[in-house]
Length: 225
Image (cartoon, rainbow, N blue to C red):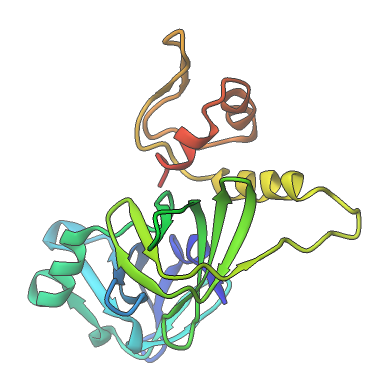
């Protein structure tokens, strides 16, 4: 499994030309199949239009790069109708609220995992209502821009670490690891109007300490890229 967070920002390489084609900017989700359909690329000619690569053209997703066979595996986004439609739907899983078909609030998605062979989303990590939870292969009824509806949540408890940390502490550490290095999509203020983090600013340990003290950790989680 590959974390979605670990895919964003990786360089895309063509094997035949030994050429870097750009960096992964966005993941386009096909909500009808709960899988990754395209990866959006940013390169040094972005002003000519966005480029995409179909997930089925990817050779491998490594720790340091994603590979395709050749340059021609890239397509221009405006020329691929279903990619345009997916981009317009703007499905963002991280930060989305998860509800069951019966209306039960499961919590908020902090991370999701992708099968590198076929792009299927196989795991969701949530900030649950009563603590951290994991959903493995839930049956997704519908995706929205800020919410998911699942038929039945398959929940796994966090395993204990050798240091016997509490699940709450373990979850907090994962949340901080997820946020460090991301950038704020907007300026976050405390209740007195003081700036905690400015729009575009990279999230650091010091910033996380500050927003945690001001009870703004959820707001910053759903407003980073």
